[in-house]
Length: 579
Image (tube, rainbow, N blue to C red; front, side, top):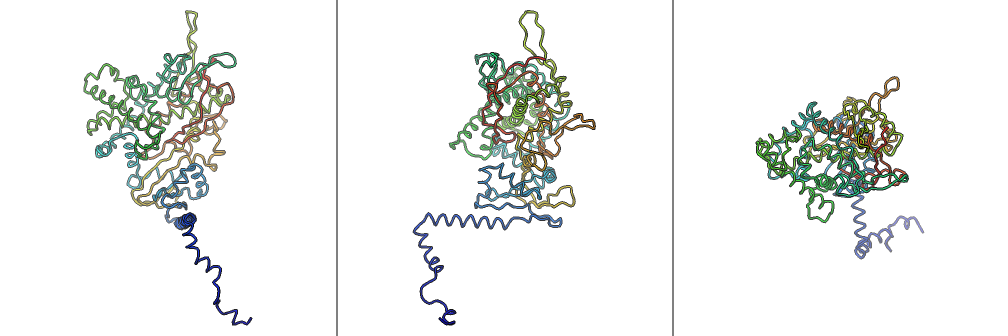
């Protein structure tokens, strides 16, 4: 063989590569499943490559604003939606650890850009952006229609005109005097109702509504003592609702529509489905139940609104509405606005439904988690009982007839509980950290630069049409901020003086109520009611695991703010032996 032969191109049989290239199309045509798989893999690889090319640089750019780093994805059109559907918590937390240096990252949901912000400095800047840059009103308006039933199409202009004075009204009634009135009325109801947290009555006819909803059953423990077995979640949520809501919507409404709060929690279970705008006829049971529950609540609230309207004109609203004078200042104050802006009865009902949901869905569930955490730790329970003793004091009334009277809550000093019980407040804050997963959402209206206060820090460019989420739970579960973040530590937020004495508890860098102009208007009332509810219950009642066994903490289930649970929450409840 000479050199000419070696250098000359082949002229006989084709190479292996040429044969593969020539035969592959016919082979794949003969095997369509393999063709589909090949095209799918090619599509995924191409999407991953193209999306990774759009990823912003992770290194600083000498202070010049750059887009928030984009996370690459595989699935075209859907983007990161499959990741969120599979395990949103694990997915977002893993990305937090990857993009820790940036404090934010962006995801693609069906072709739209969603900026996820978790660094406190950036979160504060985002929450305080003026509406010209980013606003949440569009989101709220959508939720008012899709979730709460406001006739947005028919009354869009009325809603837009009504919103600003309504928010101003909320701010006014969150001030000291109206807030104090609502808290005081709630405290009086708690003192009156806490003795019947459970009654021990075997017949449902003789039980309270909250016991019936909790499927209360009278049992005997190992000592032969009577206990009441209940679903703690249902018991706590309904008891709290009936203790708190009379100061908001009045006692007549609560008496006339006793099933309302059962429907409220049914709607809450389908909240996220309602928010998508999915129609009722789709065969999704939680969605159907949520639609039906909302319909019943809106019908009830419309009856209430007509009665309040008559009462406001000095007319007789009917025999079942004789006590409308005790309707709370927030609801009363809205009547003038409803009339001024021509708000229909159905829209008024939707507004009250949104208020009732905001006042109950999260705070009442948070009381449940606080009680779960406290009763699971008997040493903590003892410490808290000692701390609250001067401010939530039970007493055993004397009796002249030989039969001992039931204990009652003699003292319930809400201000003392809130200002002088740092361990209890720390438990409240720790439950907000561990047992909630709230995000704040805004829509970017104009291109703007998101900048923290640190002048040397990197700034980020957000584009018109994008979405911005402040992911509070990503900060609250960050191991770089909170040691062992998955562990519930009751004294984590307690502050001490130089002598080691507990002097208070604070939120630190946490922002559980959002911030800026959209900070939760009812946060002070929610805080005070949670603190008084927990103090009253632990002062008067013992709660143990069914059978006296080991306490099993329920698993979290995603909800709108405070976690729900699908785990069993059956417990034994009995009266505490008075000290």
